Length: 375
Ligand code: ATP
Image (cartoon, rainbow, N blue to C red; front, side):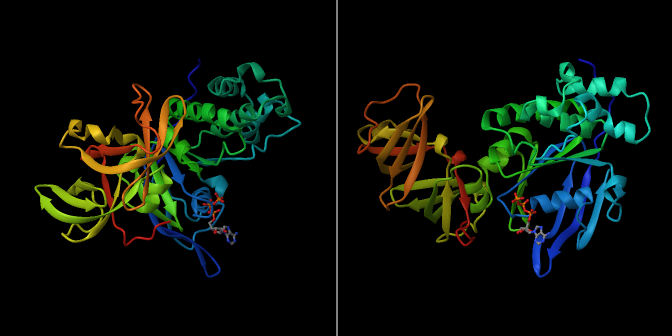
């Protein structure tokens, strides 16, 4: 494949950017640095302010306060076409009367560039549509049309590409394919991608860094694994998968660990993994992801290594889903925990009604402050 002409990604720096509509604050003053060449996702539920943030970077919305720097330059007062950005929207907005080649060439021709063949060829190769150049948009699938939209944006060599739910109109299977495709293209071109999505799996699949937004604020920023393994708030814990939050109390401290008591168990929490005040007597919400928990029938309790966190429970439900079995386990205080076990050697005793020990490594435990709102 031909290497496309290179463009260096630029960084994005937001300082105190905010947006209000009348008395409503859609984005609270926000400081954010998106490194050059990274794949960055703004993730959050509908209405959290992610699109507004993206539109302010694009120049399509004027911020109430703050400054926006792109590749080192203050662009806050510049109109969209004078910023080194391009945006890809969910609606591809391709020109129906032009073929794919001319759709991709459009930006170059508008700038008066006559010799477009090499660049258009490179772009079509990049998005793997070299054989489709003479087709009209309506003769392509949704995923292919989205790739044309991408090529059309990239051919202008933006320093930053903004993507607003670009895969939202695609069915699930195509979405998954396009996620990998977008990641490959971003790595190849090296342009900074800022991607808005409400789909946590999509953000985690593609992005180097994810900013989880809630109520017009960035609630947590980090690499996907970091956010998933060490969420700092209940909102982030629940938004990024199933979190299994258990009410517990700090009863003691030992070295760098907190010792906790919960109904049905005594737990150890490394102090560095607790975002709640680490005082003896303080309440903590203990979280553990479902796939980190193992189940052992209660009669085999002695076989569970002493270093493991453990709780007692009773299997309330189980669903075999091929690669894993998903259990719901009721704890003595009536809480229900989700447990996903890989189907490697299934213990036939793990059936609804069975008394079990749930156990997991303290390193996979996180502690949250119950004083925060639970969304
Ligand atoms: P979605 O995924 O639904 O697009 P979002 O997280 O991108 O949601 P925004 O579009 O940024 O959310 O909107 C943030 C908030 O600002 C919402 O409550 C929305 O109703 C409000 N809002 C957005 N645009 C306007 C506008 N032009 N006038 C008034 N309120 C607006």
